[in-house]
Image (cartoon, rainbow, N blue to C red; front, side, top):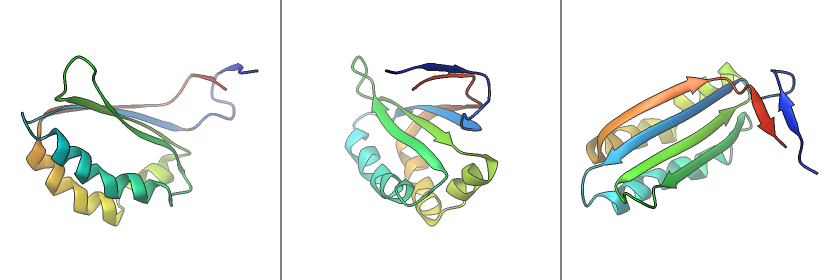
Length: 109
């Protein structure tokens, strides 16, 4: 049965939500640009969750949800070859974005 864990004991150290609006008509290109990142994170032991979401109400609105074991895992992901390759392509496709970085305080397991 799932349980709720409060506090920092046993929880990932870094949580990130990146929200962005893609330039009109560029959604398919954006999803293609994310494919190498989604493949790379499968090989990153400190990346616990990396998911790409698309709004049901606005086909140009996307966000990622990310959890990393610790700051080193977050830094390793940010410095990965896949991220270095994807960043210029994503910058060309994204009209606006914001990023929230924090730490989990409660998790349902």
